[in-house]
Length: 433
Image (cartoon, rainbow, N blue to C red):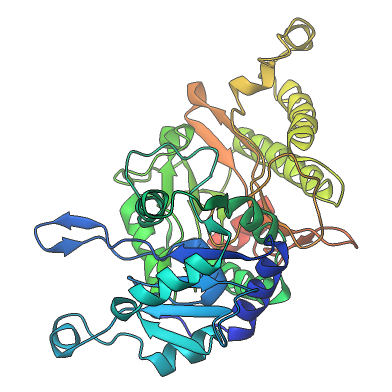
């Protein structure tokens, strides 16, 4: 891993919080992600299971974590199982955690090799009355790929049919939605690196550059700052491409007069940042582009102000829709008559603003959440309104990451340029000097 390991106190805190939510005399089992085959003997880059990482900080394949707060066996309330290395692995794959290193990274005293733990696992499971399993419960996850956790769940159901199998994800969602100061600090670091990349791009973009060249500038800044890379596939969309919400081809040339929409964020120690900016390729917005840009910015500012404890995501989105509705009327994109006659389930503003405004952010760019729970201090949300006008080859989205506190929202991107005039000034600094 490129990043500096995080303080193990974070993972110790997370395990204590999880253990407090467990039913009496139960064990929780978390598995690492698989190494995903690419072709032949190649694998896609490894990305750790967010739940396992959240609880122990081990960033390596073939890892298992056991949490059993009521375990009567001395010294086994927490057990970490890691991959055993050998000379062949060391030569071909490189260094793997030693037991001492895994103990230091996780704060877990009992560390064993996974291949020597079958008897212990059986004993601990038989001592427990129920087993918490970490099955992916993202409500938008519909994949045919079977995870390591899911395979293990099937094995346990067959091997221990009389045990009560329990869901870890409701607990994980409850915990991961509210960030500790440790987590806020690492997200802020990801945000700061993302801001560096954006400033780099402002100096680089001009008519004739290619979208992939812009992506390369961003990637360069991420890697040189010890990030794993991008937290998600970056969107570098110029002109009409900005009207495709998940455009990732990034293979067109940026033309004079276009607006370039860039949606990207770094990943540091598995924690994500998520930024969107829309900038004029020529260094100057046209009057129409500026009008649309400022409309989106006004929506962002009003939406950001509503990210406070007590609000609920679905209701928040409806209120932001009303703000956007007013801006679209002002831009002449929809009329008051259309609004008066609109289907409440298909509001008129959705023609030009068809996605939600905010989502949770953390160990995933779309982090675990309980969608209908009220906002609480410690939650981190994106705030990303946009207006997309295909007939004008113009799409503008602006996005910052917001920490909810009891004293009001804190914009983690507060030091990153967003005002139209500031963008233009920075893009033309070299030309004017």
